[in-house]
Every structure is written in structure tokens, then in C-alpha cells.
Length: 528
Image (cartoon, rainbow, N blue to C red; front, side, top):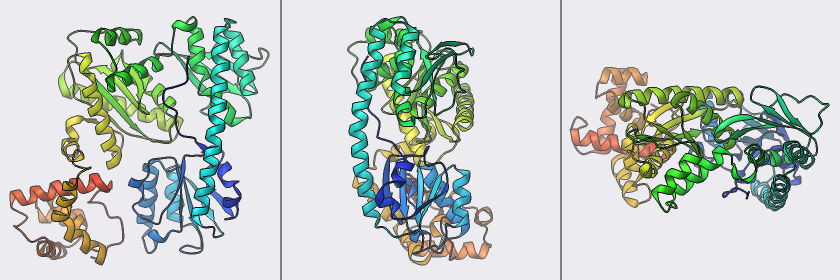
């Protein structure tokens, strides 16, 4: 058995980052969160208020709070919400330049979203901290590669030696520097490195699920104080245990089989339809003619371990759809199911149920949320699945960008955004946005007004002024003044003109897709 095709990023506990001399010189104080359990992928520094859409998850963000100067408590909470939504691991606020203490609204929102917060009471150039983290990351990556290769070699050697399950569990314990326990799904202790001891309670930190041929078999638990080594062993050992449980080298973990199959399908690496059907059968998803198939992707909180998300997705998907194929494709969790009879309405109903089950499981076990569960278009044959998978992943990416929560979405639900996404890389969309919304964006930025928000509300309420004023919380005369100013700035035909308001609506959707911000939400204090 070889190591996985794609190696994930090096994740470093915040406690190690705080111990760097360059960081310690800033006198950091942990206000919220556990630095030993908070994992950092990268370090950024920025004073931009709308920083959330620019993050990719797992970051430590350094800021002096300059972008929050003069903002309201609600705006400060919204700032934290956007950061948490993007998967930020830790917010570090340097005190003294903008704030003498971390504002209470930031702490309140961070506590609600389980976001780690630290304060920096001494001034250290942020560039120095970023460079120190980069050196630490490079050192950890080299050491991690060597350690990971050694663990894989030792574990697979245990299977090839044919010493049996108990000998393999003892070898896992030796590698982790502690005790190892293999517990079946019904709670029976199947194997233990130290038979006279009692297995500790399984937690997210000390255990991983063991799955055989796509079915939850049990749990591997490690009892050791060496947290980093424990995680390295736990990330690999369940796959080797599954091999042993499946009678040596011919059996493989069901998720691993499905992941390899879906990866090859997405990247057009399957030589024939026959191989596709054969590998699908081995992975526990036999062909069934006459039953359309659909791919489902999960847009989850980036702080959740992918292995935990995929195992939870498999359990929830099996409960809702029955036989399914669940794997990881390019660091995303993808499911393939048979479309239930009853058309789109029945499919949407099942997706809602799946979303709810998966969200509840994630929030209960990790404290984090599911952003969306998204489905591509159904296909008739298995060799057409790549198209459905691509659509479901595209919609999941858009849902993450837009900040949708706990939703079940079909591909056509975000049709306008999918169309606009095709134009993101070219200059045409930027020109269109500037042409349609540029004057409003410039005016709002210069004067602190809410003309863009007003236009969005006006169009969403079908040009009904009473409903628009109520939604904005302003008097009708204030709304009339704003609409007059919008007409003056934009020029062109009246907003009641069909082509005119269609173009503006499309532009507002494109602006939201590009920025990740909803044009109808208030982000900063209003000046009118």
C-alpha cells in the first residue's frame, strides 16, 4: 500500500507558532481557543475589512484593526463572521495602534463561531512573523515527509509479515509511543496492544474510524501524549487495519477505493466503460440499469478534517439514499447516488434530509458547520458522471463563495452564478461591472452612502417603493432621494425599463460572486 496520491498542507499547532522567538517578542495572549488544538496552515497580515473572501482556510490573520476603525459593533461581529466562514483558524490583533483592548463584539462573535483569538501587546513587524512561520513550515514539511514515509513503511510491513491483527495493533502502538485499541462498531474490544488496560473514550483527537468496503467497521483509538506523532499514525493506520481486516493485500478501505475511482473518472483516466463498472462494483456501488445517477458535493467548513467529513458523509448518505459511492476528489468530498423516484421534488427532499443530518453530525462532533450540499444534473449512464461531478463541485464552490448555510442546492438553483463564473477570468466581466455599477461603488466608497444596497433592495422587491423602504428601514422620502441620486449617477434609461433593470440585476449578482459580499447587507456604518 502506498501513501496517498495528494499530500495535504503542513498544519502547525498554534502553540508552536506562539513559541517562535519572533512571535513571542510580540507578547501574545490567547483570549479564546486552545492553541494546542488550533492548527495553522499559513500566516497573513491585512487591514482590509472585507478580508473573508480572500482567505482559503486555516490561516492566522495578523491585523492592527485599522480596517475596523469607526465601525459599529454589528459591523465588527460581521467582520468576524466572514472570517470564520472562510475558515480562518486564528485572529491576532495588535493592540495600541487602533484598539487598546480587543473589542467585546469581536470576542463575542469569535466565541460563537469557535474562532481562536490572540492579542499582541508589543509591536513586531508582521513581515518578520510571516517569515518566521515560513521557516517553521519548511522544517516541519521536511520532517513530516520523512516521518510519514517511515510510518507507512512500518505499517505495511506489519501486514506483509502476516502476524495477524493483534501484532499489527501492537506495532501501531509502538509507532505512536503509547497504547492502541481496536474497537468494533458494537463496542467490543477486538484487539489491544496492552490487553490488561481499558480503552479510553474515543475523541476527535485520539481516534479515527475504520471502514471496510464502504461500511463503518469500528474505531482505532490511541492513548499517548505525543499529539503530533499520534495524528501522523492515526492518519495512516486505519487504512492498514482495513487491509488486515479484509484479509491481507486484496482488500482496501472503501473510501480509498471510491476516491481513486472518482479521481480517475474526473480526470479522464479510465480506459474503458468496463473498467469503470468493475471498479464501481468493487467499491460497493454495483451498476443498476434504468436508474439515473447524480453527483453530490459537500461544501464544509475548511477547519474540519476531510477524513472525518467523508466518513460522516458516508454514514449520512447511506441512511438517506441507501447504496452510494463516497470519496474524496481533489480535497473535496463527493458522493454518487441513484436518483430517487419522484423527480426533482423528491431529490430536493432527500438532499435537504442529507444536509440536515450531515450538518447536525458536524456541529455535534466538531462545532463547525456545513455550508451547502449541492447536486449536479442527473445522468443516465455511469460514464457520464464526470459532468454531474463537475457541476456539483462548481455549485459547492459558488455556495461557499456566497456564504450559503445548511442548504441543499441543485445545479440550476445557481444557474446565473454558474454562467457568470465562466467569465471571471476574462476582462469582459470587469468592464461590465464598471459600466453598470462603477458610479455607485465610487459614491458609496467616497461618502459612506448605501446606494448599492438600496438598488439591490429596490430590484429584489420588484420596484415596490413601500416594501423597499421597509426592508431598508428608511422613510419613503429617504428612499426617493436615494433613487433620484442613483438615476443621476447611472444615467441611461429608467430603472423600470426591463433591459435596464435586467442588466443591473446581473451586475449585482456578478459583484456578489466576485467579492463574496451580499450587496443587500450593511457592512459599515451608513452616512445616508
